[in-house]
Image 1 (spheres, helix red, strand yellow):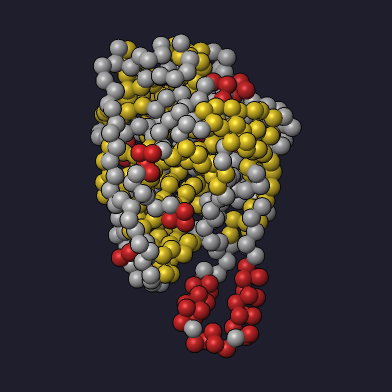
Image 2: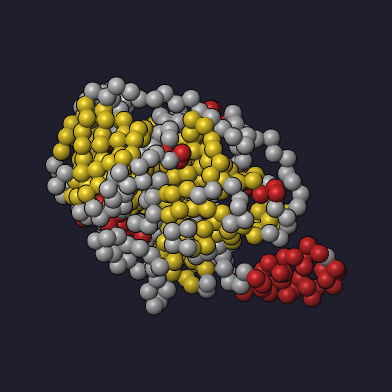
Length: 459
Ligand code: C2O
Ligand code: CU
Ligand code: CU
C-alpha cells in the first residue's frame, strides 16, 4: 500500500518555514514551495521497488492504492503495490518464484517476453484457485530487455490486469552494460495505462467486446504524476500496460526521444523519434536528454491519440551529473531468413483466429523446433489487434495495407506487433529452446478473453 500523505507534506513545509526564518532567503526552498503548490494533490511518480527473482514470493491480493487527487482506490496488487515490484536480473541466472494467489478467483502469472518452458509460462491450464500457489523455476536464457508479468487465467486476464496486477521484469546482459546507459535513479520504468473509477473512487472494470477503454491515464499507479529530474540524461523503460488503448507517445518542448530498444532489447541501431506508437503489451527503451532545459522547466510526456498528459518531468537540479554513457546504441542482430513454412492467421471480429474461438485444451497447429517459419497476420476488421506470441521472439519483415510500412521501433526482436484494420503483417519466427504448448493471441485483453487466442505446440 503506497500512501503519500499530502497533509504531512504540507505540515512539514509550514513547519520548515516557521521554524527557520533563513528559509525565506533560501532560493532553493522557495523553488520547492512553488512546485509543491502548483502540483496540488498530484502524486510524485511512484518507482516500484526492485527485487531479484531468486527466491521471490509474489502474492496477488486485493489492496488499496493512492492514485492521486486525494483518491484511495480499492485495487488488486502484487506484493501490496500497483504496479508490482520490478523484477531485475542478469542473463544466466535462475528465477525461482512462488506465486501465492490471494485473489477471490483463480489466477496464474505469465512472464510476457521471457523464453521459458510451458510449465513456467503461466498457461491458463495451470491456473490455481483462490488460496492456492504455483511454484516457478526457470533459467534466464535471453538477451537484455524489458519484459513484464501479469495474470493469464482463462477469460479473466483483462479484469485482473485492469484491477492492477502487472509489473516490470528487466533482464540485463554484458552487451547492454557495455553502453554504460543511465542507471539507478536515471533509469525509470513507466508503466502507462488507463483507468476508470466508480463513484467510490475504486477501479471499475466494465468492459465491452471492443475493449476496456479507461477514462483517465495512470502511470506507475498514479493519475498524471510528476517527477523531479536533474538536467541529465534519463533512460525510460516504457510499457503500454493498458488493456485496449493504443498510444502515440511524444514529449512537449520538442524533447527528442532517442529510441534504443523495444520488446526484445536493443535495436540494430538507435534513432531519434518525435513520436512513437505503442500498442498493448509492447515496450520501448528510450533516452531523453534533459540537459538542454533550464531549472524549473516542465516537459510532459503525452499520448497524442487521447490528447492526454501522462507524466510531467520538472527540471529541478541545475548541476549536470557527469554522463559517460552512450547517446546512441547498436546491436548485432542476426536476421532470420529462408522460412520453410508459411502460416496465415486471420484475426476475425473480436473473438476468433482463423474462425475459431480459444479452447484451452485444443491445439491448433504444431511447429518443429529450430524451423524458421513465416507467420502472416491478417486483420479482418475490429482492429487494432496487437498480436502476441509466447515462447519465442520474432522479426517483423513487412506490413502491407493500412499504414503500409514497418516503423523504426519494430526492428530487432519483437514479441508483440500491432495489426491494424486492413493490414497484413509478416513476421519470421523460430522456436529454438523448448518444446511444449504455447499461446498466440490478441493483446487487446477483451479480445483475448473472448477467445482471440490459440494454442500451438512446439515439437
Ligand atoms: Cu502479455 Cu499471453 O500475454
Ligand atoms: Cu506473453
Ligand atoms: Cu484484437
